[in-house]
Length: 234
Length: 217
Image: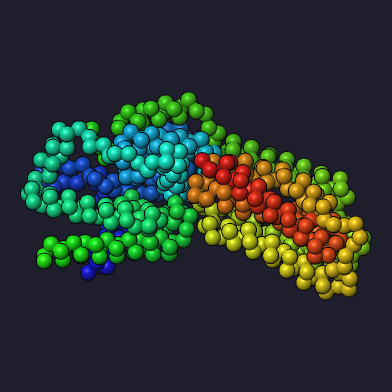
C-alpha cells in the first residue's frame, strides 16, 4: 500500500517537475475557499532555472532576478527547516545567491543549477552550525494574527487539525531520530522536490544511495505511524 | 507576509548586493583560466627543459616508451575522473575521488615494477640516487599547474572540496610523473617510492588542504 502511495507521489512529483501538470504555489481548500499558503514549496521546473543560470553566466544580468524567483523559495524552505529561524534562513538564502553570483563565470555550461544551489546552502548551514556549535534556534512562531487567519481559512474540523498536528509532530520526531544522511536525502527528495539525481549531486553520492536512504526513511516513518495508530486503536 | 516564503525585501537587498559585487562572466573567466593554465604549463615545461628534458641515455628506448605510455595512461584516467567534471559542478562522487587517490599511485608502482622487470638490470640500484632530486623536481613541476587548476575552479565545489582538491593534486602529480619518467632512468624500488610516489602523496595532501580553502564556496 505504502509502495503504491510512494509511486503515485513520485509520479506526481516527476510530472510536476517535467511541467506536465501545473504546479500551483498556493493550494486551495477542498471546499474551494480562500487559498492557503503552501507549507511545502512545490518545485518549479529545474530546467527553467538551469536556463536562467546559463544566461546569467553568459552575462545576461536580468536573468538573475528570474533565477532568484525560481530558486529562492525552494532554498528558503530548505534553509528554514535546517535553521528553524526565518531571519537566519533569509540570511543564508542571500549568502547562497551571492556565492552563486560570484562564481557565475565558472558555472559549467549545461550543469544543473538546483543541486549546486542546494549544496552551497547545505554547506553554509554546516559552516554556521560549526561556528555556533548550536544546531538551529527556536522556530519563530510568526505573527499570531496571521497564523489564526491561515487556520480559519483552512476550514477544517478542530479534531482533524489536532490529529494532523500530532501526526506532524510524530513525523518530525521520527525524522530527527534518523541518521542525518538518511533524513537529508528524504527531505531533499520528498520535501524540496529534487529528483534523485539532483539530490545525489547535492550529497556527493550515487543515485542508488539516495534511493536507498529515501526508502529507509519512508519505511521508518511508515513503521512509526503504524505503531502510533495501533496504540491509538488499542 | 507568508512565513513559508522569503520576504519581498530580500530580493531587493540581494539585487543591490549583486550590483555592488562585480563578478566576471563565463567568457571572461574562461579566458582568464586558459591564460592561467597555459602560463602554468609553460612555467613547468621551462623548468623541465632547463633540467635537461628527455634523457635517452642509459635505457633502451622501448623501456622509456613503455614506462611513459603506462604512466601517461594512468595519468589520463586519473585526470578524467578527478579533473573533468562533465555536466556537474561537484564532479565525481567522493568514492571515485578517493579511489583515484589510492588506486592511481598503486597502479603506477605496479606498472613501473612490471615493465622495468622485463629488462635486465631494469630494477637495479644506482649509487647516489636516493630519489631526493626526483622528489624535488616532481614537486617543482607540479606547483604551478596545481595552483592554476585549483584557482580556476575556486568557489565551485560545495559538496566535497577537500576530496576534489586531493583528486586534482594526485592527477597533477601523475602528469608530472610522466614527465619525470622521461628524465629519470632509475627504477630501483626505494628510489621510485621516494622520488616518484611520495610526490603524489604530498600533492594529494596539498590538494586536500588547499581544496578545502579554495574550492569551497
